[in-house]
Image (cartoon, rainbow, N blue to C red; front, side, top):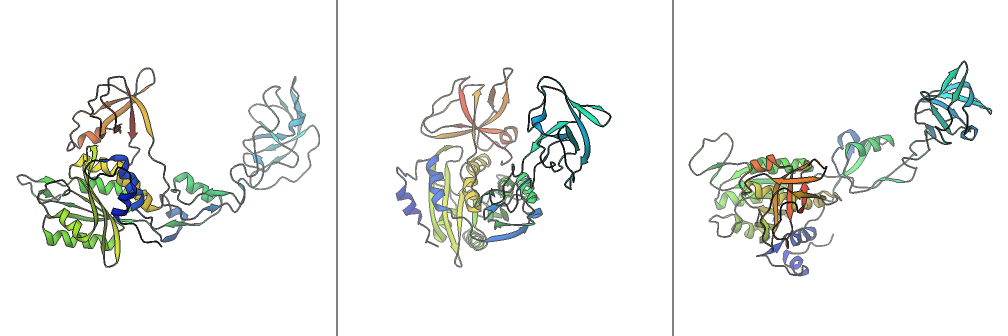
Length: 428
């Protein structure tokens, strides 16, 4: 394995890199070079693999379906015998059930009653749904003009052919993907190991749940939002609670996290001029860059690597305000952790919606405003902001179903203008 680049080497490869006014797009480019995927594989029973990331291509060992079969209950016959201008009479000579091939011969003018999923008898290629035909004793009449040759037949391998790649390495195993693998008869699957992500909040003003309120202190909401986002993504969480703003406590927490985890996330202690020891400890233990990102909310951020006992972990030092934590996670940490997981995930799509109100915006920074997307009477997507956009107003994230993304060079938005919206889609 090649030695990972230092932060300085990565920065040199990025044109226009300025840690004091870093465009949001540069952050993702930086992290794409910084983060290296986990290298260990696991073999899991398929029933335990939901949400995991495939470590190898899955090549189909069989064709699905393994034979031509009926798509519905009805009558199988030769499509070439259909009359175009009058009903087609057919004599029923047997019944084909799912699970076994029908044994027999079908002559001209004959058909076989067939059940959904049953193998198509030799020479037959069309199925008339039972609700369309008229029965007369041991014969049926197929109405004219309703069917074409080949209708209601599933072809061998139309889902997958033997030898075809069914799922590619780097895919996340959704319920549909697990069902697809089950249809191939695969009881186990090779996946990447789940990354371990350690998190702790920093600051003497942070209260853990259960502690009595005190003047100037706030309860730790970041611990629960970050834990939820990490686990929803599919990583293993190492919850380290709240760490006081004391050098010895911080050093012990950073060393413990770096030794146990693949990534370490903290909140608080990265703003310019903060009177705490978090930044100093990050510098002491690792190769860390401190950024002022041209974005709102979430301007201050620290990124790098910290090491302990020969083990290295990626570090994300997030701001302390609750909304800023969630926005920076969605914009930067989430795609970086996906890369760590080995997940070749597409970027979250941006939808176009018309703003219901004017939005003030300064060019030169990316803004993420909380919004509620809906459809108006004409069926158009529209979006409204959720009131106060302060970075400490966590209730606005609960009310929102997406983030209005105002680009780096974008200015004020007039009511009725189209804007980009990143929908939450369960990840926040």
